Amino acid sequence: MKPRLYTATFSPGRFGRLAELPGFFLLLAVNGKPANDRPLCNEGFLNVVSPDALRVSVEQCRAVAKQTMAAWRFDKTRMRWTDLTEMEKPLTLRLISVNRMKTEHAGPLGFARGRDLFVVSAAVLDDPFANGTLAHELAHIQAKRALGKVSEEHLVPRYFIEGHGNIMGRAYRDYLGVAKHNYDAAKARQILKFTGEEARTILTDNSYGGRGTKEMDKMEAMGIFFVEYLRVRLHRGGVPDAVERMGRVFELVGRGETYQSAFQQQFGASVDRVVTEIVNFIRHTQSNPAERLRGTRYQQFL
Image (cartoon, rainbow, N blue to C red; front, top):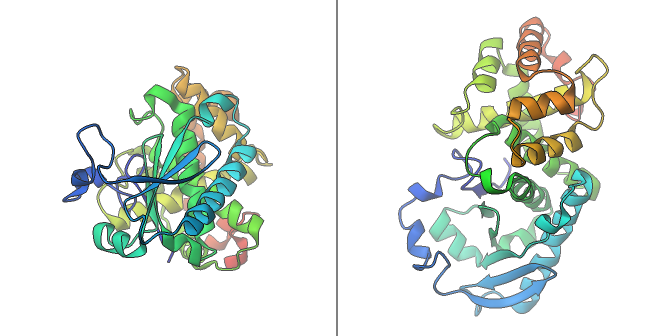
């Protein structure tokens, strides 16, 4: 199973609900910043701080900073954001020791908070798979920066946000040639098990995913399938640049469009129509679910 990066903003299930975690806000001083952090190193607009300066070396700091910025650049290049000034505003990475992450946050690799803070464990240096998780979470931060002031208003559905993050993580791992695919295979199995009613619920109830790990897992899998449906099946031939068009949706919503209007502009179909198509496709493939993965990045797991 994928070592998770917890996100307090986009993903209230497995990725976070950090505001509800006992002691979380004890990490923050009155001004909203950790009280015991020290500057450690920087890489471009990425400023790395740490409460564990004696346990996290400068060399580790620099390595994590370079690793993070490589994932950031991959996401930025792939998404072709139109406002690079917004994307390159200062970003703080709070680098903490492996032990601190295990004791204070039950062992995730890290989590993104809002548009400007990324908390990361030094453990990301030890597992190549973590590069994909970095790209996943940084995709969330970039999407929030594209959304701008409305980024906390939940105007874009969770399945769309998590589908985008997951696809970016997978794309970066594929780009790096990471061979570990346990997480991807697990998501493929979840996609094969969906019923039409489950699909409709996940794609129409934006609170879905916020009531525990099982919901979150299913919502992420449906988000992945939603993106792949756009990419290979929408309009029967698919929309090859669907992921980039998702970026335009984030930007349009940030400029005042509704999600429904932005989606229609980018994909030439209403959200309701696409949801209906997906629900019907899930129903029609109930006896042959392998058909759902044909032509997708997840076909290899059949």
